[in-house]
Length: 154
Image 1 (cartoon, rainbow, N blue to C red):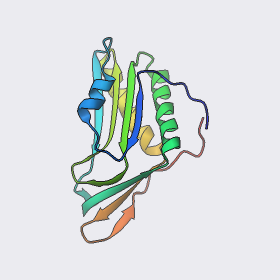
Image 2: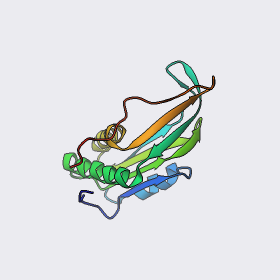
Image 3: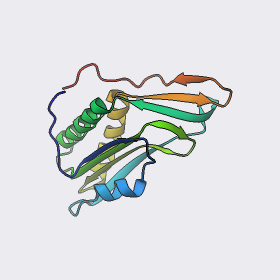
Image 4: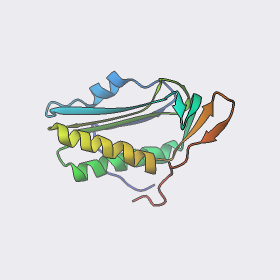
């Protein structure tokens, strides 16, 4: 796996356990930050007009954590004043209303924190080797299209 710069106050987690919004927020707080932005992805009850019963996530954890570190590094390249980046993702079966992903970014100012957090979730959805399968109320299921692992890791 490629070497990636790490930052001591960042945190990257993949877990089967429920995610804690409060824990992620506290992990991202920093005395020099005027803003902490947290993006929470939750399981919704429908997708493309179909009633969703639950989701199942799978991940290639070692590579996903490297991608999380790369995302944090890219955030710091674009927003150098970033203080902390925290990314937690669930795997396994998640029911309606459960949190699947939390991304938090702290910066001195809100504009940078919002932009960096948006960049973080958008990049994660395209680059992290995490797959989602939707299970519908009618008994059908399907893998969600559009999320893919990066073909090149730099």
